[in-house]
Amino acid sequence: MSWTTVCKTDQVQEDFPFSAKLGDKEIGVYVLDGEYYALEDVCPHAYALLSQGFVEDGQVECPLHEATFDIRTGKCLREPADRDLHVYPVRIIDNAIQLNVTEEA
Image 1 (cartoon, helix red, strand yellow):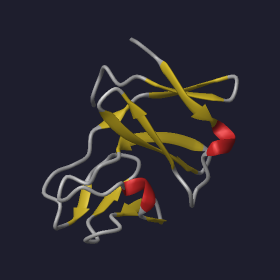
Image 2: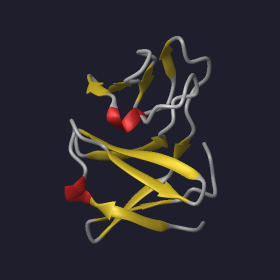
Image 3: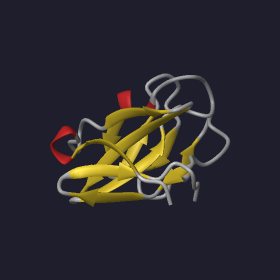
């Protein structure tokens, strides 16, 4: 696996995810109940960064057309999006959040 540091843990808050770009991938990093998650950051319905959307009850809502996704799994919960988001492995090393974007779950 190839791990890349994208930010520090204190840069991610439950209400304010961190937006990262690794190569051609835009990724949102979220924290829920002390656990970190990384998801594809661009809504599959229309170009909008989900990390700029509304986070509530373990879900993120697209700021454009209100498609909703489960942060833990990437599962699409409400249209108009028509597919789940890609999720990426996350690990924490000395308060640094590292992602492996070579694998998609």
